[in-house]
Length: 157
Image (cartoon, rainbow, N blue to C red; front, side):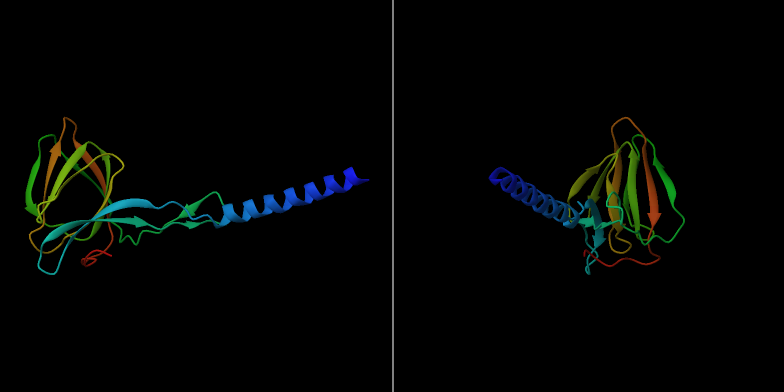
C-alpha cells in the first residue's frame, strides 16, 4: 500500500511539474527579429540604430506575427557590381531587406556598416545629408524595398 501511495504522489508531482513547464513555455517571449534603423537627427546628421520587431505569439502556439505598417508599392532594388551612390536620402521611409549581394552604407556621422542577405534595414533619413551606398563583392546587390510612410518616421525609437 505504501508503494501505491508513493507512486500516486510521484505521478501527481510529475503532473504538476509538467503543467508548470507547459505554462512557462506558453509564457516564453518570442525572440525578436533585429534590424538596423538609418535615420536623420534634428541637425540632419544620419545615424545607425539597432532595433527589433516584436512578435506576438499566435493562438496555436506555433506561429507568431509582426505587422509591418506598409504603404504598398513594394519593389525590388538592384545595384550592379561596383555601383556607388554618393550622398543621397531615402525618398521615403522604407524597409530594405537584402536578398542577394552585399552593400556598404556610410552615414553622415561617419559610421560604416555592411549588409548582406537576410539583413533588414529601416531607411528613414529622408532629410539632411543622407547616406552613401556602394556594392561590395562580385555579386549584384538585390533588395526588397517596402515603403512604410510618405513622410519620415522621425528618428530612432
